[in-house]
Length: 165
Image (cartoon, rainbow, N blue to C red; front, side, top):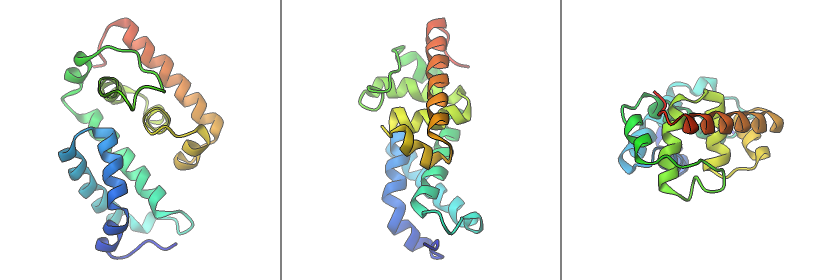
């Protein structure tokens, strides 16, 4: 499937998906709207790197995830988010609990980027390891290892009682 040359067509087709993805990660409508605009600007600038065999939705998903994670990492709010709640992060409960999602955002700021991507796909989006592997372009086993390392690291950070810096 070729990537649409027209930004308007691309936005109409995939804009709602990108917005939902950004909202899920950033947790704020204004930030999600801004991220959506930025993702499409970046996508159009990088359209020559789009692989024709790939699906535009998968490509935009990755751009959105990376952009949002970078925004979280760069945010000055991380201390504030971590101070709100110090609860255990578990895969089954993160996406349903706003307090745990806030904690997750704080942890994602300092996590290894690959571990953060896997954690978002599995713990936030509720993807299976196979689904996450397809989206991230790695093996299912790699997704499991990345999630395990993230969980171990996150529990260690929380047990230290120190907020990530």
